[in-house]
Length: 287
Image (cartoon, rainbow, N blue to C red; front, side):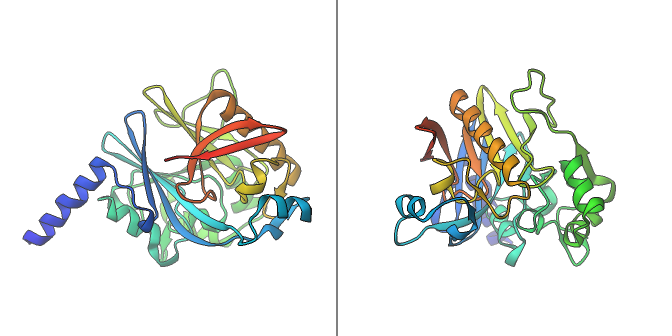
């Protein structure tokens, strides 16, 4: 019992103080008074072959001969006792669950799950054997995304992932980027439409005490190429033209407004700053 209590105190202290460990794939930082944790679920060799319109010369110029890494991330936000998870990973080996536990948070302490879109590497931890992994959580996703993947073009994995939550699944209409009167989904959290990768792909602007973080989800997949060349899309983008357009729009917005970004497929630390460079953008990772 004493050992259990002692470990609980250690985990609580880690969560309160901020915990960063590249070996564990956890990067912590502050957004105002909020504690934010980037959680790496997986990292593997990347494949530039998914890019559409990137010629051999571009690939050779921007990607090292040794190759590059592709990562899958989620984010945990802790605010005044509230625990908010942005995406859940694929669910493989319960890696994301293990990481939030390492931070002193149990699955039944997650009050909110924000789903950026309904691809399997973003909702995979929602259910196990037909039961909700986060039983007390409200699951938020855009109405357009929900409509497409549960009715227009049903995805059985997405349907099964949402089913245990019933009325706890809440849909919303995200704001347009730069809207003069954006509607917050939760205090300090504004969903923004970034359609293209999927029909209802949504990014989230997090604001607290004057600081901002824009979680850009799957706005890009191969950072080394798509930051300097945002018009290059990936085969994963369902509407490649729309994805390219919104990618440039979002990166331009983040650069002009000096807003930190975080992405689901940006390698550790997964966050950083964007600046305009030439006809594209430069990304500087967080430290």
